[in-house]
Image (cartoon, rainbow, N blue to C red; front, side):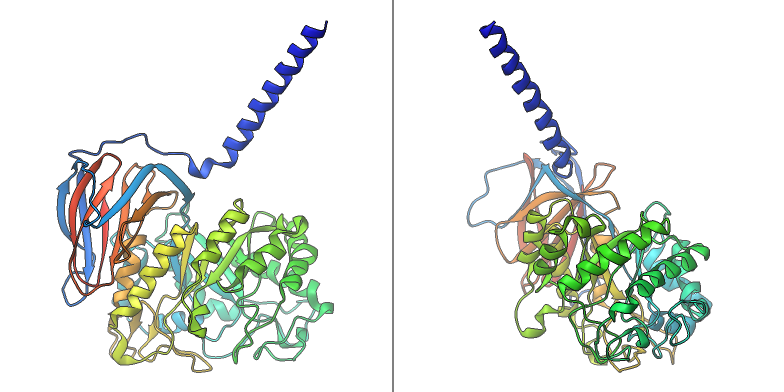
Amino acid sequence: MTQKYYKLVALFVLIVSCADTKVEDVTKTKTTPVTSVKNYNNKTIQVYTTAKDTELRLTKTSEQTFKNKVQPLETEIAVFVNPKKTFQEYLGIGGAITDASAEVFSKLNDTQQNKLLQSLYGKDGIGYNIIRTSIHSSDFGLGSHTYIKEGDAELKTFSIAKDKEKRLPFIKRAIDLINENDLVFYASPWSPPAFMKSNKSMLQGGKLLPEFRQAWANYYVKFIKAYEAEGIPVWGLTIQNEPMATQRWESCIYTAEEERDFLKDYLGPTLENAGLGDKNIVVWDHNRDLITNRANTIFGDPEASKYAWGIGFHWYETWTGGLPKYDNLKNINESFPSKNMLFTEGCQESFATERLHFWPNAERYGNSMINDFNSGVVGWTDWNILLDERGGPNHVENFCFAPIHANTKTGELIYTPTYYYIGHFSKFIKPGALRVSTTTSRTTIESTSFQNKDGKIVTVVMNKTDRKIAYKLIVGDSETLLEIEPRAMQSIIY
């Protein structure tokens, strides 16, 4: 009897152990290899390049093949890609269609409007599939507005009529060019209506008054339903744009605890009760500096966390003089692996006409995109997709750069280097791709890789130095020798 008992116990332990293993495997689906290929010999490589002081702009610059790998030397520069190790699934890249972008777009003739749309969303463009917009006004527009009459807490006067004038027509034309399975459309509020706030103004910060929390949660529902009635599928929303910034434009402050409680007690339940529980809620939507505190507070609370798809962030923490805090993203990825990270806004501030083609602006994008993706980020959203010759319009004169500017006096479209640098990712990496393990042997070049569903790998390499660099691209047991121009970006497809 004793031996049978021990055998039964051992069998039970073995079964439980196997069951535990299965659960662990399920939680690690993001790191499941998508290929067992080790040898890429004779496989064709296509290289596309954008480089400063040249005519190269997403230009195909070479085509070659892999050969057997040779042990690299310390004196050589190398990019190492390991296709056996894959990570997060790629959601996509895009930009915001703001009231400012829509205003500028409306001033273009039909030819230039079509050119712009094709450049961003068309099959020969750079493949944007993410669109962000504001819930009523932000600073990038001709003035402040809401969707209700001031004081209407019951939202009886709710109307998106103003958006129908210029913003919605632009959004609809963009959506028509995006594969419906790839479209990610989300919205962010900059401020509740003035009467709902402690400072009685949409500007200069202030807080949402407790007695209006339910009314404000209802406002999100009204927005989603109004947009979807226009044929625009809403993927999700962020709770508040930059909730720790008191700005001279539309802004509203939430501490981490206040955002957590608004999510779990009001917004989350309200969306569910309205049949909108499938909408993705993104918390924080501010800089990388304080992001881990927000994640710890919200994701650490099971009742709040269950409503949160993930966390969004901007790149403006460098205003203090420091460097981008990519390590904070890695910390969140390690601490809360089931949550997603989404870059929700970035732009080069302080517009100046003479810097429309300033190369470091593009390199800021390249550095951020490579490091954000390597930190576990699933998607990347630029700020305004289009601005005018002054970096606006902006009703508080907070003029900034965009990847594309339009001279509203001449009708000319101006494609900045940033447009091409973003394109090195968005044009070649497709939604559903998995990030592939990629490292470099030197800090002179930066790199990331993704494998598309069709099996092709896209490796992006950036050279911020003033000299041409020869480097080995080593993939599995194969290698090839490549060169990258000074101040250049490359996309390598194989």
